[in-house]
Length: 166
View 1 (cartoon, rainbow, N blue to C red):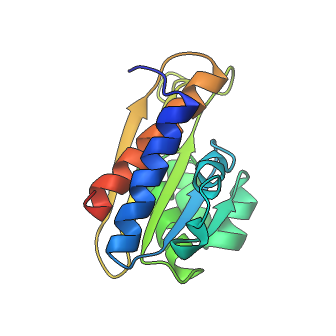
View 2: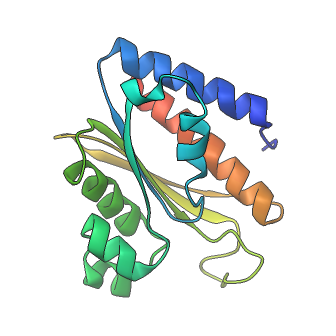
View 3: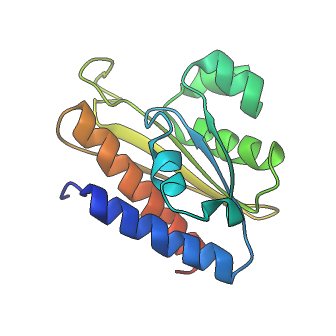
């Protein structure tokens, strides 16, 4: 997978904003390994307050529990980087916002922290629509910490475009 440039990220976010405006939807984000990068790309766009409600940067397990109501059992049984955790994050972000659409991201950006079952570069995503099913997906990205995080931001935006219908 190629590494998206800042211009490509801005173009994805601009397209997402147009789609959300056209469908009268608002977005909320729950970011872990991307540290608010998706929100940064979105809020770089003038007028994004018309479609971006809020973002949560929940880096620790405690913050995932406190701000997004991720069950402690989910974190203990599945880990922070898992389908169950990102699904709970996506639902929690919707519950704590006025948005109709959410995206959650949790991964291992490296250079350390990986294991045989959860290697560096593993990122889980969830996209949820209020009162509908949540979609989860994992990707394994290559490169250094910056590259993994940049690819995760692009993938999150592309997934949001798919959910929005853009």
